[in-house]
Image 1 (tube, helix red, strand yellow):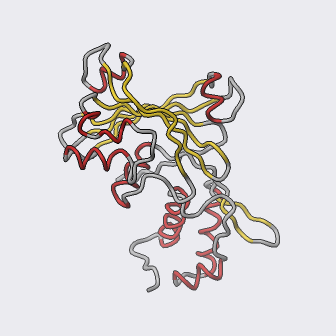
Image 2 (image 1 turned 180 degrees about the horizontal axis):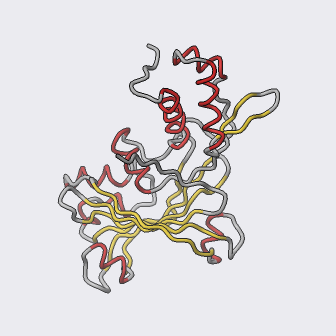
Image 3 (image 1 turned 90 degrees about the vertical axis):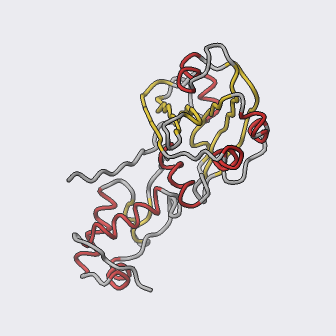
Length: 244
């Protein structure tokens, strides 16, 4: 069945189709995009409109023209905590097809004061800590640490293992407690990489990094997980907002 244009402007429907596939990792850096003719035929668009689709993707920094090849994806994407949460809720998978995570540490540790406050536990109390580095075909994408209340160590012992969890930590927590992420609070800032962060991301110490701090909450607004992440330079963070 051919894709359908559901509302105007038609070309933006097609742009959003390809943008979503790129951000979610279905189309990755270097993949060839359909030609103007192919887009026009598949979406029943005029050639001028189909051409505008590719021009918009190039203008957004998601694609570029290559002589003798056509238009290819050019996007080193940083997927936010919200991106990953939405992907998990819609597909059951946290990581894009070209990504994988290496769990570098898992166990109980004293939570820093800002983590304890975000989790709603006593300062100085222990919490479950899981650390990972996410990779794609270009190398390390991000390094992150997830924190959970200590009682989850008994309810969901898989959190204490460095083995990867099928479906990610949200799936094992939901299975053990019935609690499901419904809200993600996300903050970001910019800093320079410490030696430890630089080693994890295979970049030079002092390189600019994007820092994120995220709180995953259930339907009642109660925290399930607090996460912190870093991503190196040269990766884009994409958001889209509709204003009415």
